[in-house]
Length: 189
Image 1 (spheres, one colour):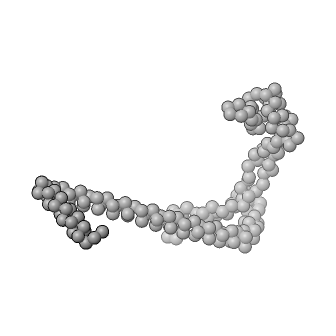
Image 2 (cartoon, rainbow, N blue to C red):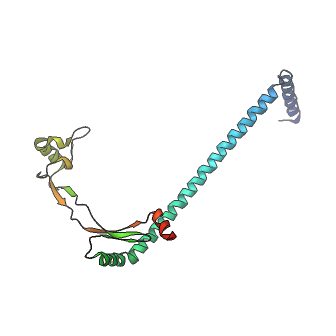
Image 3 (cartoon, rainbow, N blue to C red):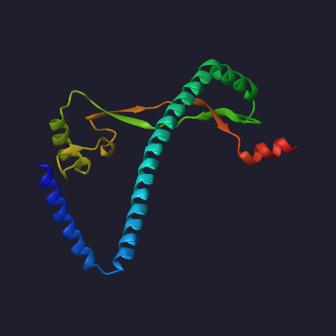
């Protein structure tokens, strides 16, 4: 664009702006200033929220990394000392009714594991054969809402489609942290 054309365009723009200014209400300046300030505050709030979200994401990543390090440390403690401490606790509670030992930092001991039965499918039956058998012998076990399927937990234990595996109960070693109140009471004593 030639310099004369730029000057002419600038002059035309100035004429338009002067016309707008001449017809403008004096209160418009305050209204414009108010709207501008409100927009500026809203923009700063949005920017602040965006920064907070970024910081939260960084904190979450750090927290996950630190939790993984702590889990690894816990596994190392269990690997190094777990079996030895379990044996010591077993010897301490041998011949007593108690199944746990209380310490200043928590309780260690043994718990009985649950004896839940597990139902397994016999592999010689296809899913279609299972549905056909269940429709004939145990219709309550058939779920027909979307696709015919069989709920093995609703089948009778004597069903030829499943075999029942009983879990044996065993003692499981555990540690439970002491309650804060008890730790404070022991410190004061």
